[in-house]
Amino acid sequence: MSTEHSTDTVRLDEGHHVGDGGIPAQFANPGLPPHVHRMADESEAAAKRAERQVAGLFTLSILGTVLFLIAYFAFDTAHRTWVPGIGTVSTSNLLLGVGMGLGLLGIGLGAVHWAKTLMPDEEVVEERHAMRSSDAARGEFVEIMRGGGEKSQLFRRPLIKATLGGALGLFSLPLLVQLVGSLGPLPKNHLSLTMWNGTPDGEGGYTAYTARPRLVTDPESLPIKASDVTIGSVYHVLPEGLLPSPEAEDEHLREGLHHGFLEEKGKAAVLLMRLDPKDFQDTPGGKKAQEWGYQGIVAYSKICTHVGCPVGLYERTTHHLLCPCHQSTFDVTDDCRVIFGPAKRPLPQLKIAVDDEGYLIAAEPFHEAVGPSFWERG
Amino acid sequence: MNALAVRRRHPAAIFILLLLGLIVTGAGYAALAPKQATAATASADQIERGRRLFLTNCATCHGKDGLGSPVGPNLAGVGAAAVDFQMGTGRMPMAEPGVQAPRGKKVTYSAEEIADIAAWVASLAPGPAVPDAEYTTAEGGNAGRGGEIFRVNCAMCHNSAGAGGALTRGKYAPKLTDVEGRHIYEAMLTGPQSMPVFNDNNISPESKRDVIAYLKTMDEAGSPGGMALGSLGPVPEGLVAWVFGLGILIGAACWLGQKGA
Image 1 (cartoon, rainbow over the protein chains, first blue to last red):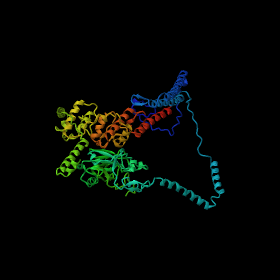
Image 2 (cartoon, each protein chain N blue to C red):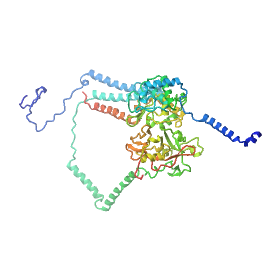
Image 3 (spheres, rainbow over the protein chains, first blue to last red):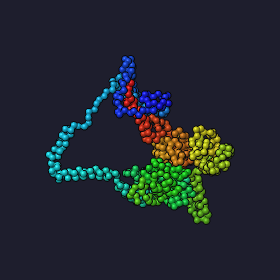
Image 4 (cartoon, helix red, strand yellow):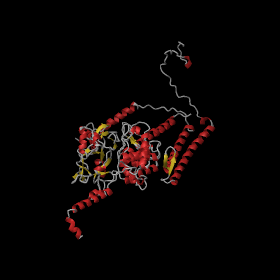
């Protein structure tokens, strides 16, 4: 190992050299690296080859476009082809995509290859002029601005200055009010009243039922006999009269709802499950759930209390109800208490009973608002 | 008529009327009552063959009487349909312990052996029988209506395209591509593992046939738009677009910016 100070290049196999600390006061501008000529600049043959490559890429684009045009007319949209790795796909889709892809890609690649091989690539230094204006120009600008203020008499008449400021300041209010006011209508009691309360009158109100509504299946709209709900069963349920039920005697039930159908369905959807009564937990929630049900049959709102996705994933072995959107998990054996996920309150239970003919009916409407929680919910 | 009218106050008349009423009611009930599905047609021979197969192959977990053990559920009342589904799809016998029995790559038992075991299990207690072929072949099913029923009742777990989905703690709803119609029907009827039951009163045999027709149509339709990416919708599609699309754009930008020579 050498101890003498050196500024010469050190070879890797020489080990450590102690520097002399001689750092120059200022590094010199190294300038541009020497220009290296490309193959095509030096040999005519290479230039010819580059020309052919660019032309080849443009030809590829032409072929792609022709393929697109032929495929457009030659293949019906119903035609299918099997493609390895993808499966059975629409021939038309595939060839139109490939044709258009090649058509654009060929133009792009050709242009880039042309620029990189044949267009001039010598480095040119272009000096930038100073950004700062001259003092004379700056002084002139100030004069013009001040002169404008004087001539418009803005400085002499403070009344105009104050009212203009007020007008401009106040104008920000319409923008702000609009922004806040457009956040949507307030929920009010729209989520507390559903089609389990009554028939919608079209103006946001509900006309109470004369007889409590039956639970019917979605989408077939058939009433449900309590004895048909075997243990482990799940029924997707809507209130009678929402969907058209062709076999009903009552005219309104036969036709179903005409207006606001989706909104009513979104609020009234219910999941009906039957558990072995032994499976309910011995907690206040578990007891209430059974009391509001019928021989182990319980009905809960299907609308998640987090942001309103349909909670439909019921595991009949664990009795967990899972929401597919954010994995909120509800325990059906304990009154749909939240046991996991972002939901903050249990799913509202629908109190059910059985009518004279053995069909399930909603004994009472929901006692609380369905769907996502909001500040007015109380 | 007169002779009858005269005897209507005979002391025996009330008993004769009661008897007649009972006979009519009984006969009517027998004719109209829903039949509890059982494999009543199985011969004693078949049941005995099934019992022997069960003892050598299934009893370790399900107990020698089929009444369950700490590691395997009670099979009384599950019916022939459950056996046909679990063994016919290769889920049973289970290859290894786990949260859920996966669909088997191959079925280890012949159709006769499965039918024998099913007959024995069905003899334990009444349960759903293997469904009638009329409703399981998708023949005559309305795929459009089936899709509607599928989206309400099945899609939340199995995905609207039948591609399957995740449940809690490692459990999952399997994908439904290339499943035999009979097994789809039996799964709805018996509710295997985490799946709830959709009995024939909930989704009628005709509606089940429609659902099977829908799934068959989905199988045959393939994926006309190109790679399905798990049929999971916009999330994987966006992921592919961002990763590969942006990747290619960044690569192209680097290539463009590279100094030629």
